[in-house]
Image (cartoon, rainbow, N blue to C red; front, side):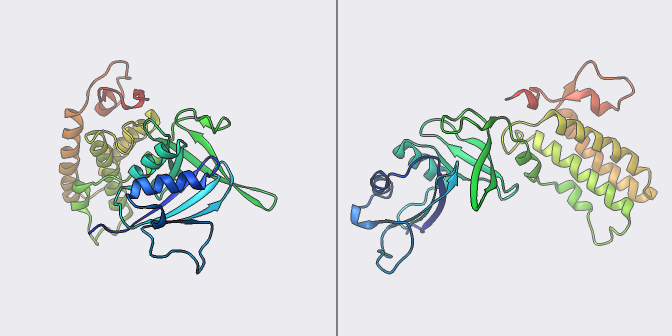
Length: 274
């Protein structure tokens, strides 16, 4: 039995209710009487319909919010948005990760989805839903900056099993917390590197240099730990370092006084993928 699905999507263009109705009939595989579309909820609506869609007009770049309750489909939100965009021949926007809250996806009728950054602005008594940046030019958004959106990378958490094994309620001193935090950050970058650079397959040079600086601090912080604890943490660091070495190669042009990790980089360079 198919589980009912809920989708929250947004339009950048005018809403053609008749076209939307036809698209939903096709997507859900139902007749016209089994699709209910309205601008609000009232007693006269067909609450038992296979498809319920409530739309709300917005001001700004997002022109309509579409709230769907689908009883006969189980598409992911990304797939549903792609299919609906193709049938309506218009871009569809939907939320990406919860953090940052400005992170959204935009899918055009044909082609891969792209990141877009959403912002809200007050104009008198009206709240405008403004898309301030896109990864590629979009005809309906001529004012939006075309730029990468690395903030979603920073918020994408990676698993750090090596660092996690060392964490315990006894992490009472600041020195211990700092060194384990640095180890976790270093491990997170190495895990990201060996996993294809999620979530978007690239990594800014600025972030890479920050990570190498974290490895510098980790080396310094180890000197502040008691010898027995330092040895345990150093063994964990060595495991992460070994993975880092295997996933990178020597690069030229780095000052000789830099630690060995500054002299290595992955291939291809993740900040050149865009």
